Image 1 (cartoon, rainbow, N blue to C red):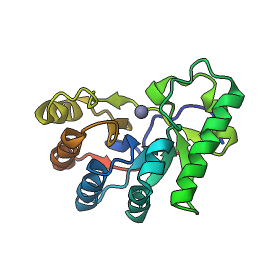
Image 2 (image 1 turned 90 degrees about the horizontal axis):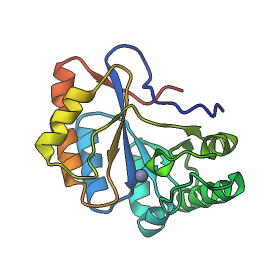
Image 3 (image 1 turned 120 degrees about the horizontal axis):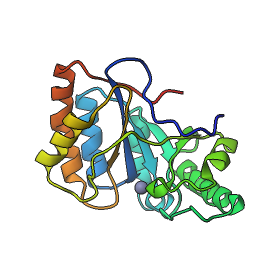
Amino acid sequence: MSADILDTARGGGRVVSLTFDDGPNPTDTPRLLTVLRRHRITAVFFLCGEQVQAHPEVVRRIVAHGHRLGNHSMHHDDMTSWSPGRIEADLRETNEAIRRAVPDARIRYFRAPYGAWGASPAVAAALGMRPLGWRLAVGDWEPPGTDELVRRLLDGVTPGAVVLLHDGGGDRSQSVAAVDRAVPVLRSRRWRFALPAH
Ligand SMILES: [Zn+2]
């Protein structure tokens, strides 16, 4: 397992990967799952352990819809100054929380909160998780309004980009609506959606 931070989608040309952080969220994650199913997109969900503990049924729905799981730490802490041992304990605790919700879950990726990687890439790789970054963030945490999010998605995509979005951490209704609107436009411009490279 490489510790290099991956930020590219699988395949060549106009292909992008959608990733969603900070969930599961009992309101917006199910709505997002409906949108992704309607558009036939498989995405990666980076889960926070404490959210997993609060909403395990939502994790089961994510898996039932065929999406991939990533570890996004227990409490969304900045790990920049943490020792490898402290990081490892947190990542293991997060994976255990996910596996209490979905016992046979495959947890293929890790993403450090805030992209503050510190020593985490090597720790994640040693635990069998590829560090996954991103090449496009649209600031949906602000949130700036659905129209603006759609504009940022349409203007910001580049071939092979991993795209960072959020289904948790607050009201993400704008993110869900923006994905629903942007995907058909991107498809009409011959963009395809794929999982990250591996
Ligand atoms: Zn996050």
